[in-house]
Length: 308
Image 1 (tube, one colour):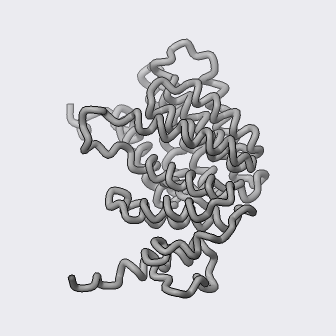
Image 2 (spheres, rainbow, N blue to C red):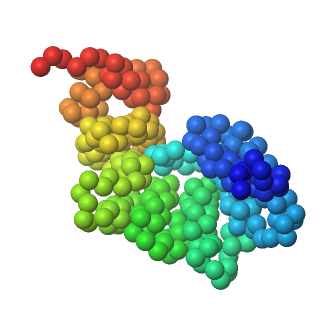
């Protein structure tokens, strides 16, 4: 049966499924309101479908509710949902959007807790804990949600994703050693997720970029900004990560601004200075550091390469 020939309720159900995925793309673009409106409309579509056909649509409703929580979290943090995400404290944990995000996510967690069908609900339950960790008011709560997500992880990739949340929570706590331990474990899990028989497989580049950002923040917290700069420079030279270069620079700048132990050695890192075209001037200008680094990078990309 063609979609155009389907009954309106059936057609709305399938369109809502498509719109649910489109809403995540809107969140990645920073279109928070449009994403929120789309998701709220989808919940009504799923419920109408379930009522009209007398079928179960709980999973779809819960998944969309979780995405609404994520949408409010992104708006509350003024952070598009695209990797790499900077590991930062919440700007104001009591902000209405963030409170609403936590309420929607907790609603999903409460509905899923104890569900016997882990095949169906396990992935959503783990994802809900990851989102709860992202928006938790206290870093200790963020860590508790991340650790529950780790327990719910069945595969190496899921474990790597969940450990990334644990690193971020440890960074929020100021626990440099704990962050480094989780980082090491998470990077090992990410490597284990790659198929051993195919050296061309690049894996999830977004999660790779997230670990670069987390590694930089962890090294900055340890007071090893030279090592953080080296890790960033390697990533900026990696063509596979080209789509994430600006995000990595922004995440590094955010971390360097906020880390009290930053020794400033990254500013004299020769390789990074060349990549950013800093020359002999250590000052990056009057803008905030994340913006200044991205601006330098964009300017550098417009400079023609010297003739060989």
